Image 1: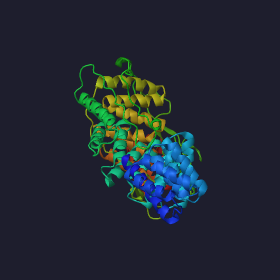
Image 2: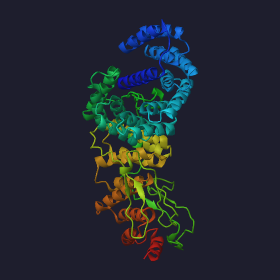
Image 3: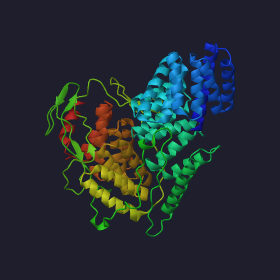
Image 4: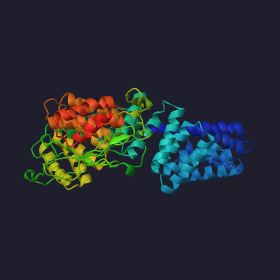
Length: 569
């Protein structure tokens, strides 16, 4: 963070020097001489000497706010933060309109990083930005303070305001990455760090943050190692170079072991450093440890959903509609809430499971509500295609990670975690299941079933970021998997990426000609539901509903589909 510190110093000095010229230092000996000497020492980096001179000036002309502000700057750079804060506060008591003192006081309080100090720092930066509405450094500091206070909405507003004032601000982009990190939206977080590096490839905070999130949250350890090495190659060396080097070398060894596992060798996930810009306790990595290995024998492993499982069943739905005309369907009535798709893990399970139904038969809402766009930019949204006379809906687009096929790891270790995860999933202990599946994928990133089941468990848990990433990883291993692509499409739909959901379902059908008729019918039904209910394109939905009847005439939705087809001719 040396760049940020130098920026802060330059800002403080430039603001104070400008104010000194504007206000003047109307004082006689020895005040003016001490003040001039103090400025020279300050500019040369002799902060202790400068503080001594400014103290002399303050004793001689104690009513001049600018002198006290300079004294605070000298204390500040000398590391005497309490003394600096006291001097800034004196300056503000003498002149409440000395805006530089608000900024400088906020910096001194922020650097102490304590709860009461952070609240006070936020007040000072707010006061400063209210008076200096075009100050990028002011909004950056306000955003950093709000982030530490876990005021995530406030931090986002501040960083976006900084970015609006300076579209090239890599500090603002990095800050927005930290905002998404705090929200556990790791893919969006990584996108902001990547965006910052596109503008400034050697921007140290974004490099390190991207490395940490790739290692600890996005399960892309090879790319994480690359980013760590880029960080370590920076000149001059970052202050935490040795600590990061230790992490990178351990990660390098882990990857080498994963590529060539030794017999009975355990792969221990390497803890990554904390992100630049947030306190240590705000983003701890969920890493495996050598004493957390599974102990369940493989023979006792439950049977979670796999490629060979029976297809999911679509349960009865509600009403069909065409404008204001609705037709009752079998087993349903007007106003019935959509039921769920349940996985038939072993042909007997009756508990709710993976997929929440998209019901094309309920009455369309008066207004279309779409999820907010992702933070990349408004250019990442696309209008959904619409039939003539229908509404055009602006929808967010999914930012694909597009991982490469991972190297094989320690499969035996991964299977032990998998057994525990499957048991937890069957017991509906979803948080435990997700954590254990993640450990399985860390032990062997190429373990397809672990990646696919991680997507399934995370979907049930409502962690769509993890679910989508897991399905992308599964498809990187087996791009031909109909089941994984179908479920990926449904997860995209649940996450609000309906355009991408439709595309993935189309891809699943294009490559699924060898699948059973029932499985193909499911995909056609899900795609028809999207076109009808989300895009309001009955003409596009119609052939898919017809295909469901052709492939599976006894489908549980057959009566409802026929009613919809009659109502939407």
